[in-house]
Amino acid sequence: MNKTGQIRRLTDTMAIFISHVAKVLPDDVMKKLEQLSQAETQPLAALIYETMFKNQKLAAELNRPCCQDTGVLQFWIRCGAEFPLIGALEGALRDAVVQATLSSPLRHNSVETFDEYNTRMNVGKGVPTVFWDIIPEKTDCEINVYMAGGGCTLPGKAMVLMPSAGYEGIVRFVLDQMTTYGLNACPPLLIGVGVATSVETAALLSKKALMRSLGAHNPNERAAKLEALLTDAINAIGLGPQGMGGSSSVLGVHVENTARHPSTIGVAVNVGCWSHRRGQIVFDQELNVSVATHKGVYL
Ligand code: SF4
Image 1 (tube, rainbow, N blue to C red):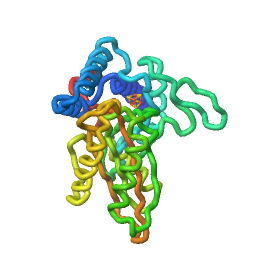
Image 2 (image 1 turned 30 degrees about the vertical axis):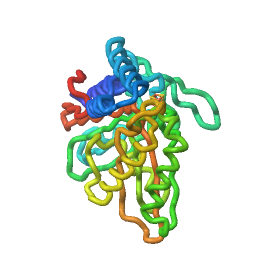
Image 3 (image 1 turned 90 degrees about the vertical axis):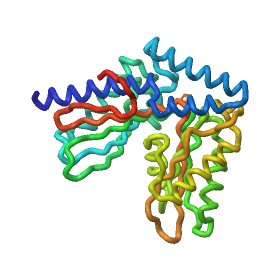
């Protein structure tokens, strides 16, 4: 296959995958929702979980997006430096978003800032957003697709704490956001927390944390302990599914960190909702695909 044909294949595969991600939640999210539903003791919360599962069943049967807000498309990429289509990838992803918008269909969610018109194709200046990690000497390419809905994006916040605020300051920052805006984001929530030097480094980490599989923890045991403590604390707020009260408020809390300047604690929080539409696909250099997040997907 020549290069044009390869780019076409990559684009078509991504369009089908984006469409699938809009309709079918990843296996780990469904499993977690089932666990939370089984552990739920409040009748209204149990009914809401039941409705969520019915929603997912109908979305698959009717071949429709499982939430009306199909979000702004983001791609988190870990691309081998030797992947043959590395230079064509951003263009292919943009074309794939347009294709998926028409075929799924996806809601029109890209408004040009300052000019205030909707492009009606889910593309625009800097949209879809692509975040790159280049992996030396590798030939494959991992693409994490994420649909950033409006409601779950709203609680996002980043700031720089004085070093004296300590780890308690991080906990206070996250809990303030969750008690103020958690309700808006269609719980149970996936909470991403980034800890680094500055607002931009912390913010990127907090969103990257949402790409991690549920049940996986930060490899640093103190960071993993912070994840567990925050999970307990946010559950104790009692948001419950859709914020109507219940035993659990979160799908999980993921903390990502880097080393930081000794005089600052950059901290950020990003939130995913119960309809956490994330999908991971890997292309090898021959464009064979494997999908880790959605069992049985046909591409
Ligand atoms: S927060 Fe999530 S489930 Fe709620 S409307 Fe937005 S995208 Fe849909």
